[in-house]
Length: 494
Image 1 (cartoon, rainbow, N blue to C red):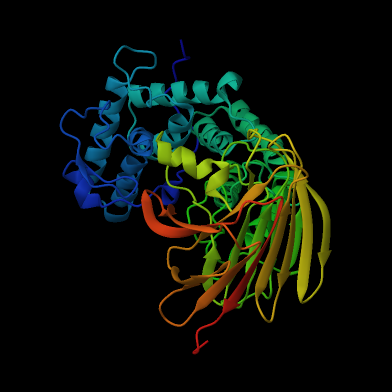
Image 2: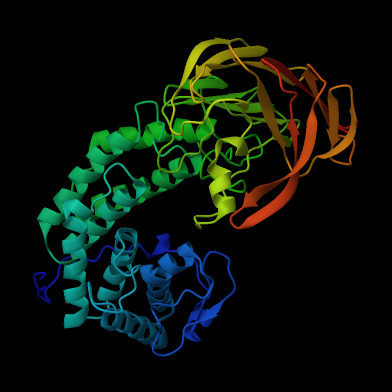
């Protein structure tokens, strides 16, 4: 049983500007729109077990109540008491219908991330609504957030838990919760982000998310009157380099791991070399900074898959002349579907696949050698993901833009998979060479040696959350070693 809160209070640190935008008029009419799915009418009373789209993210958003928190922010701007009354009614309905551990309570109601995202919205409401039920709910949220057995250390959810615990602790006048939150988020950041800035969740999109949320955390710490730990600042600064190098010349994050292809990362400082090898498992290279026509590539190695990573080791992506060329299946959703599972699989990436042996998930990959010059770079990588040594050698050249990849296994044979951006279509195919283009004069040529036995097939690639488009996958001939050469031919106007 949680400790009942006193109605006397401390400072309300309201983070409403961090809540997702809503259509206020829509919510006032009983409608909600989450994760770009069609609006849903909630009804009165609200059915908190509803999930009309059968979507995990939609169900989570319903229970975070951040959409209620936006009503509070709208009330503060306009003074319209109807907005506050609606926010009060939604919250009262949620509290009454979702006792922790009660029969019929939605499993999403007290999921650790829902608690972490909902608590700051309740703090915002508490600045204007002073009721025993709201104060008791805040205290219960605090108890759950402080419970070490429910804490996601080293995870973005854990950071959200710490932010929530800090603002709840300040609101209820519990300095020990605030201090616990600051200690935990500092230790957690050092576990989650290495000294070079690589986030161990293995998706650049989450590096961006954690950077933003750390900014919110720093603001909340300062508003609470506590001292900001230098160690926390250092890890956030380190993240900036990782995110900057993981950003393609078009301003979008390279879609590695659970990173949607349409995620942008603007405004990150990028002093230093144009090629960076991160020990956490990434090579990011480009021909120039601040040039949308620059060439860009990524290569994956390092520790085995974890959290938001994919089975993408030895995989490469390639961007040149303002266009995406080699892409991965990408991130589609968190839904438990066969397609979402496939997007995380090994063959959804640009990798060599031995024709014998069984893939062993989570196998680490070694970067054996790298040579970085101004006009070309080369790398050698290897792993034992199929019970034998796969070796990949990558050469990237600039002016002209090209990528050459040599794959080999000591016994048996392999095939190399190459997934092309959906904007590119096959124009011709002859003698081991496939030419693809965008219809405006831009073409890319892929040459395989040996060339006999090459295959071209359609593939379904993710272009954003719950969005797909048909692309082209070129499969190399089956051989003990395969050389793939990709050359870029810009359109006449470029």
